[in-house]
Image (cartoon, rainbow, N blue to C red; front, top):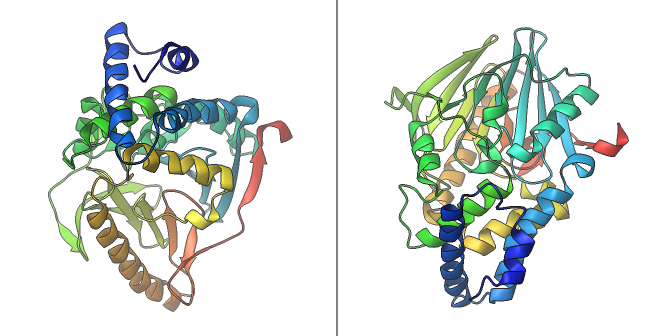
Length: 344
């Protein structure tokens, strides 16, 4: 047995939320996953260390160990966009407006209280006045805290189906279904995912296109108008992108990352999913097509913003809010500031 008694004792605190039946299924899927990756060059010992490292890292970076980098971006009419790079996983985007807060992607469930303490320390209030929450896709680092906010989150119906299926490989057969399922259970459980049973769905019928991406809906909040684009499903089924033309904001979710701006610790943590599954994208070729198309569109939109004396701000799923440099590469829009729980 690959998942021996010692290993199971070490991960026991992380899998505590699982029922006895779920735990038995998790262990069985772990056994198969170990064997699959061993055949691909990762030793059982190294693979299981990756699994344990998720729990160790999330525990180390929660509570007193919580730290982040953040950017504060002034928008029009008294609005501010606060983009928080969480210590593990994707960015938390907080719109501070006279009408209350909008949240775009929520981070892990285990970081919710830390994030609220952080925005309080930054004199941005708390989460009690959140009026609108949007989740771009079904990975735990983008929707895992959505059940804590005081409003029903909005997501693509495929995202909700994916969450109910228990695997990020839902609707994307790629021959790695067991690996996808074991990783999904690991990350959802260890990070204490909390997604409400009832969510609101965005529309899915195309009403136009932006390059290769169907425009499927629009959201309004404060005086902002967001276009909602359907992804091609390269990273995960049901992923959406959002574009706000007046403020010049393009939210690319995990189709575009500014990996170079991640700290070494965050970059190392981010690599765990690739190592456990083989690729964090359910379809790597489609993901490459999406990246190229988003960068092409971004270049066009940036020219439009330049004509108005502004720049297109590319809000990646991970890493700093960026602009395109002279070579068309992502470059931080501003120098991220540092926050640590023990500094406030």
